[in-house]
Length: 364
Image (cartoon, rainbow, N blue to C red; front, side, top):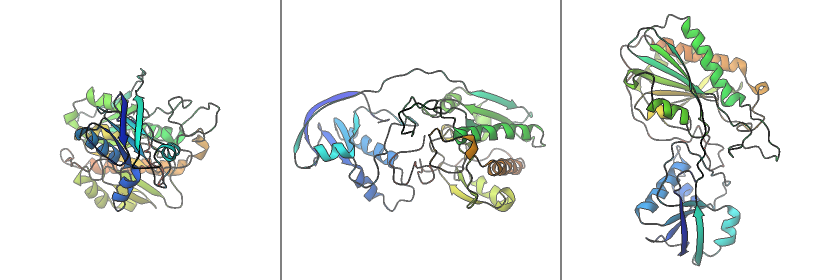
């Protein structure tokens, strides 16, 4: 698990007891039942909260199992997670059926959890349009993907290694970034400078954007806001639905959308607004530095993290419309006085970024 500490366990414990000095067993189905009326259910976040409680109450390890009908989709994801002081294990449905038949039984447990360190090199690509303005707007997209899926984050089920081109995730966002740079260079929008960031290391844990916010090339205090584009190439021609995340990170966003008119900004389309400033993409790193953010996303699809996420499945007309929408929004922001105010929002909202509705995983 992403939040598991390294450690070993050698103990006798009962599934039904949560005692200090003993391993704990927690059924994810209980979490789902408790949160069934929550439209913003964040399963990994709820599990992390459970793990922290186990630490605080003296558990020596945490064993998670899943008796619900949801698939066993919970998997490692290092994005925004924090290591705890106890090992955390996840039992598959098969293991649960084998070992947890009797909740009153005493179990002899031996196990070891360890995360293997792996050093990688990555580079952010930075472009800067200097308009001599006191504030800077950051426009970003990650340009890394999965390679041959060697980091176990591919959903490819075949035994053969195949290249993952990542046309939607995230060549689409990278192309949008380049086009916005071209449009802004030749525009009259001079009230802000523009910093264009192509991030590396997003798929393995937002490493590129985290590094930038810790080692910025401009004063973070002068950043007006940040726009992130991740998977903007699969606009559905029927619904024309565009997810806009970070909507609650500033009161200005609602004012801008209402002032311009939603149809004027995004012709013949609909919006799915998500107020949260956090999520499984690079805008999270900026939100955590108290910078207002907007996150654009056209939704998940069955090619996600598979070799089939290729160029022939991109909706190029739809993507062009999204780029024009963002450019129009930047035009509206050009008339604002001073910096956009920041508003703190709830933490990760899974409604628009869950891997699939029946899965326990989250979208890297």
